[in-house]
Structures are given as C-alpha cells and as structure tokens.
Image (cartoon, rainbow, N blue to C red; front, side, top):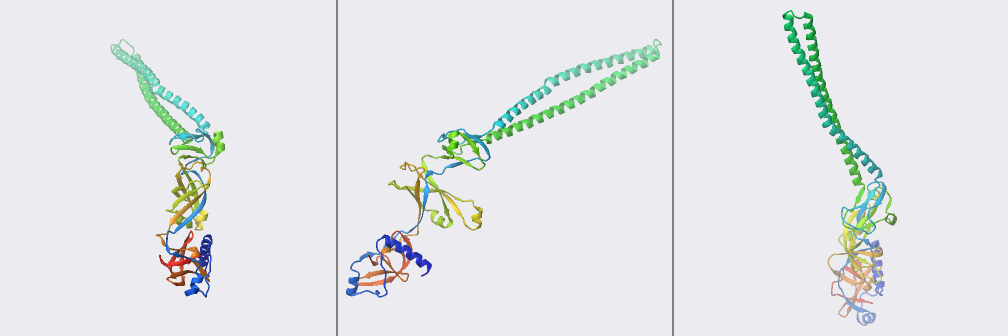
Length: 407
C-alpha cells in the first residue's frame, strides 16, 4: 500500500473507531441484491451524503500571560536600581529604573566646579582686568607723552640760547639725546601695549575655547546620565521579570537582558513558536484558547509574527516563527499564568461532500462505501481527502444526496 494511502487509512480508521463503527469489505460482496442484500444490510442505517466544512488545525499547549507586553531591555552591563515598584502604573517616558551613576555624578560635580571657575576667570579677563590694564596704560602713555613734549620744548629753547651764544653747544646735544630717549620710550610702550592686547585677546580666546570644551564635556556627562535612566516604553502596568530584582529593587544586569515589561492588565495572551509547515495554517487562522475546568473558551487574535533569529537552523533551510496572540481578560478571571490549549484553525475552501468515517470500508488499502439506490446495493470506490472530526472529504465516487450505509 502506498504510504499516502496508509496514512489516510489510519486517519479514517481512527475516526471510524471514535464513531464506534468499523467494518471491512470482502471480495464477494460486489454487488448486493435481493434477499441477500436485505439480510446483509438489515443492521445498518442509511445516511445521506452531505457537505461539511473542512478545516486544518494546529494545536499547542501554551502559557497564559499578559498579552503583547512591551519589553524593557537594557543596553549595557552594570548595576541597576528600580525607581518604580512591581505592578506600578506608569506613563510612557516615566523613569522606572537607572544604572548606578555614582561615578558620573561625581564627575559632573567636578566639571561644574571647573566650568564655574573658567567662567569667573573669563569674566575677570574681559571685565576688571581689561579695564584696569587699559587705565594703567593710559596713565603711562600720558606720562611718556608729556615727558617727550617737555623735552621737545626744552630743546627748542636751548637751541635758541645756543644761537645767541648764551649756552654751550654741548648742551644742545644733551637735550637732543634726552628727547630721543623719551621718543624711544614712548614708542616702546606703544609696541608693548599692542603686544599686551594681542596676548590678552589670545588668552581670552583660549579661555572661551576651554569653557566651550568643558560645556561639551558636561553635556556628554548629562547625556550619559540620561542614558543611565530607563524609561517606560508605553503606558501600562510595570512588571519586573526577576522576582528578586522586584523584591530588592536593584540588581546586576547584562546588555540585551529583558528586565521587565509594560503590560495592559485588561489583555491576556500567549507567545508560541511554529515551524514553516505549521505557519501555512497559523497565518490568517481563527484562534481559540481553552482553559479546561469548565471555563469559557476565549477567541484570540494574532497580533505579531516574527522570524526567530537562528542563523544555524536557517542555514539548513529550517525556519521558526514566534507568534503572539491576545484576548480580552474580561470573563477569564484566574487564568493568568496558567496553562491552556491554543488552537489555530483555517477553513479549507468551501464546504465539500463528506462521508461519515464509519461508513468507509477498506479492501487492500482501497476505500469503498456501501451505496443504496432504490433496492439496489453495491460498493462504490472512493477517492478521499482530508479528515475533519468523524467526517472525510469525498473527492470522487459520491455526490451530496447519495445514500450510503453506516453501522
């Protein structure tokens, strides 16, 4: 018997067994007629071939948790302190935890002091220092200018006296030398002031540069302190993943670790994994969640499908998908953090002709049905399709309305 027929026979026989009817065709029962037929079929009932909606279904055990949680992942290694307690109601952007920032806070304090000192020095160099040095320079310039002018006047007078023979010629030369020294001193002073102002401008520029660099450093520290704060990614209820962390309010974490999540307490759900062949059913399927113990079943919705990152398996051509489902928490008290059965069902086209599994016989692996037409009885060869519950799709051999016999 081909493998596909073996599989179909097993499914049909199992469905027939569940329906409490199992019988086998023999080579000498084709066809049946007259009294023999009536005596052979007296304990069988007539069943009309109808249509049945066939579905494919994938069923998984699942763990009920809050639905579609927004994960809180850390992006660095370190010590983290919780700023909010377990189950706290938070808003998007609220600080909920922070990395240990003792070193950064100390560095920030030192930089602020340094920046304050630099600003004071800059204010002094551009304010009192500049004003007072300019005032001193003005006094010195006035003294040197007045000295030069006095010596120039004296030289004029001495030259006039020397022309009248009232003074020795060497006195003229001495007066010229003193005037030249005064002019030189005034020129030197002006050059010194030009140099001083240039140096002062350079010093002020350097101070401003240092202030800007320090501000930048302070900004970097503040940015690091901001990154050290972990904020809520959404509105909702905060749930810390590690009970120890929730209890102590602190702990050591590794980069990429999920330390908690933001959940909606009114939404429950589950996260499941499926391989490629299952996804053909799961995608676009109707989802239900059963809890047992007489609890009502929940209709769920697929809210996210994500390829599981597994390069090794993907290199082998095997892909796995993580599927998240959610359902309203209303009317489902007591199921949170419990086990359930998640069913994914997809209809296979329109309703099709179907035969009860108990009405099917097998002879050498080939399926048959005992048909009835008036007083005539006979075996009809069947081509069968999918099994759904206690029914089997009829691909050929029978049409809706045909009568068959069933134990």
